[in-house]
Image 1 (tube, rainbow, N blue to C red):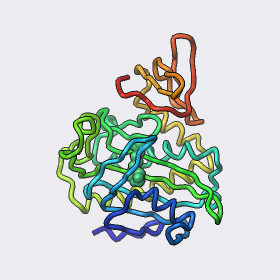
Image 2: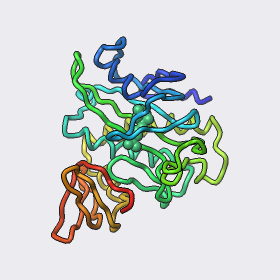
Image 3: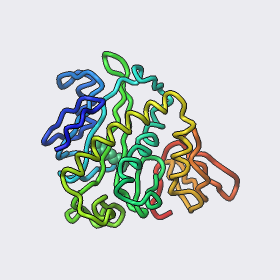
Image 4: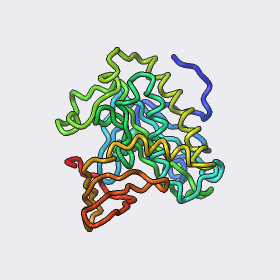
Length: 257
Ligand code: BTN
């Protein structure tokens, strides 16, 4: 077991519907209450959520948690919320890089971390207004030793676990050490975001998986297609379309490029 002191208290649960949903209920007082900062970590989720209507599949070999934070206390404004995905993605990259060569790690805008082009982590930041002020919820799912055998063929094709790529077996103790590193790195990344995001935005720009590659982003009312031209300091994805550059701030990146 890893008993390192962490910067935020952690509440560990065997099973929950979704750690993001529990954080939301605690923040709004609809299911008890909790004071931020607090990390809600679960061994299993019955209704884990991803972006949009996506579900998030995980098991005990996954790190599954949500940090419930008071954005005002850490100097984060409304406009920072979408950037929290990228800030957290940089923290995930740094937490797993001791186990896998850095050159294999990338961020797939806006909220995935990939190894060799396969997703190992997803991030879901949400900001809500609770009775005691705004709250930031940063949900992270990281496949450390996740067994994807029972996942759908689609998930198995696109996703993997760190253990698969590390080339050495990862044990429960490794998972605990990665969790402790990740919490510390996440706190540091969010602090950097509030103080001076220039260093951080350089990192996410360097890690951009879509840079120079064909990309299509579904904005609902239209699809923007072209070549990825970088993630800006404002978190937007620049795309060189045939009719000039365009920056998108939301939408769904279509996996078929
Ligand atoms: C995505 O890939 O679109 C984001 C996935 C985020 C998954 C994490 S797991 C912990 C937290 N609780 C959830 O229900 N979702 C996030």
